[in-house]
Image (cartoon, rainbow, N blue to C red; front, top):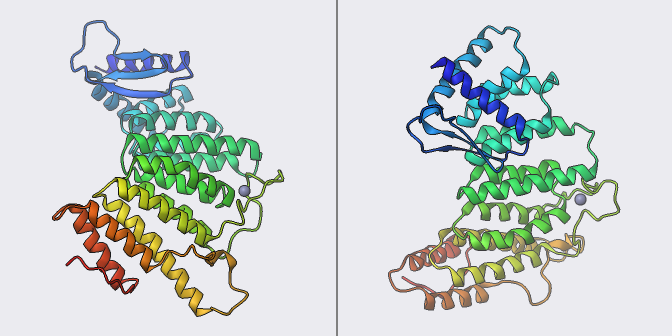
Length: 364
Ligand SMILES: [Zn+2]
């Protein structure tokens, strides 16, 4: 069996060498070996292993790697790469193996670019694996340690955003993909409002098409909250450091207007999609922010120095009356005894108990 596993690993290694553009890995449900047929399938930059050989390959590579790891001896990096790649493609949860690869990056035996490519390949099959995103973050940090131009940083950010969207499309509520996206905004983009505002706009389409994906809506909440912070960064972000671009985005956009836009966007979604708890949670987030703003406004009502971003423009304030109108309209859409009705009842309770809005409407 060892000879067979060794041969399959060699096939894998040669295929990767032959085609540097491989961007997808999978396991094919072929449960029996056909004599003399290679179980490594390579078609149009996609690579796969037949199911019957996966266990043999994994056990072999695993024991080779851990024997070496316990009592290191000199091996060539090709050999190391072959074992660790096979293990991680099949099971990316083993952090010891990722850590060994990190050590190789630090010793310049592995290129960070190739690590990014490899971990992306792993994500193509396991888009919800935390250790892969953690490894990517580490590699990105190594790569950027103070020597990256804004232009190449922009390319990386764009690439990472696409990767996160792919992960979110492949797996609903893909918490780790969304955390990676949030991390990008915070750590690589320093919450630059120009980028945050572009994200808010570009993700509208995605969230509209995934109304029960609470991770997607959580991410919107994170983006919105970037605008509510008082300690906004006045330094240019790393992406706009050398250009004349304005990091504060549409500086004229007030937090209040943004919340107003968001609630209109949400009202349309809720009218079209009934019975989605995620949408009601998002509504509570927005209303809670509005409530908080109003409380702080009344606290320093005559304070001319209070932050302008937190004030309503005339006539745009979302108030009890507007909320009630929405609920009455929604009541006509939701049938008696439906899940949407239950969600509405909970929402009304929340409005009365948490933000203490004196609604006259009652469903009970
Ligand atoms: Zn910026």
